[in-house]
Amino acid sequence: MKKMMAMGMAIILAAGLTACSGGETVREETTTAASAASENKETTAPPPAGNSNKVKKNPYTEDIKIAYIAHDLSTPNNQAWLEGIERECASWDNIVVQSFNGESSAETQVKIMSDVINQKYDAIILQCSDGTALAPSVDDAEKAGIPVITLNLDAYTIHSALVMAVDYDAGRMVANEMAKEINEKGDVVIIQGVAGLTRTDNLEKGFRDTIANYPDIKIVDAQSASFEKETAITVMNSFLQNYEKIDGVFCINDAMAEGAALAVQSAGRKGEMVIWGADGESDALAMIESGDMTGTIYTNSWDEGSTAAKIALLMIGSEYDSAVLTETPQVIMEPIVVTIDTVSSIPPEDRW
Image 1 (cartoon, one colour):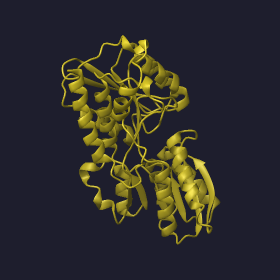
Image 2 (cartoon, rainbow, N blue to C red; image 1 turned 45 degrees about the vertical axis):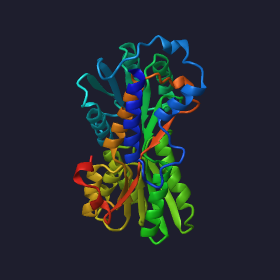
Image 3 (cartoon, one colour; image 1 turned 120 degrees about the vertical axis):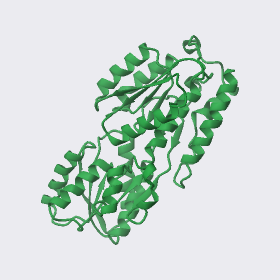
């Protein structure tokens, strides 16, 4: 029964991943925990004794508990991921999804992880506030036989799987689009996220590396707004006071882009510059439609949460063990460049 269940879930997972990873920029090395586990089961030794005492469950019959531990549960991304997880698990009345708010604190998330491990949850879906600080907790969970699937913000240790939107490529896409819009010359600014987080650092790196290909475009300033809309308004107001001419603004997430757009409007400078974000939340799409924002890189966060849940369900009740891995398997979600010309391609049912 275990093997039949695992094979069935693998088929479901493969179908789901095929549907959500068709973009050209999805990386060739992208793999799933399913394939990693399958390949290694035939070529590696049995799992270490530390995990072998865990009683394997059948998700079709036994009660299952999945923990979703968010960086900040109040953000649109986290809410959409949670809804995607809940949608995926809704077909089984014996699966309980419990969400926890990390309140943007690694210390809080570490405490939650300890509680969840002690309560013997069957899987953990985690968005790390700090990948280094959470790594020991992720190791503890995996050693206890609890698979950890991270979302967008990774844990810096080998674990069951990472499901994420594109980062470096998203920054590259924004840079190329912005360069076209400002005729490959001008002054641009960056509103940064929290330094040290892989996704946000890579978004900025992709943007900077690509803008460097345009010698007449200069990045004149960069400041952090810590992903917060209100903070971004303050940062953008500072830019507007310090620079008489700004041609482009790149914000590491949509919330900050929305804040930057509001500041530009209040200053009476709408239309002077292009404003780009990354994520694709519904408020940003509405601001693109109204002309207040220029563009964003859209990712279907419902599908992202659903994909994380698919992987968790595959692992629960299977013989999978992350100890066989030499690196964390990654699933990279499809990115879509959204501007006023393409925003209508995102239907209402896909706007989170």
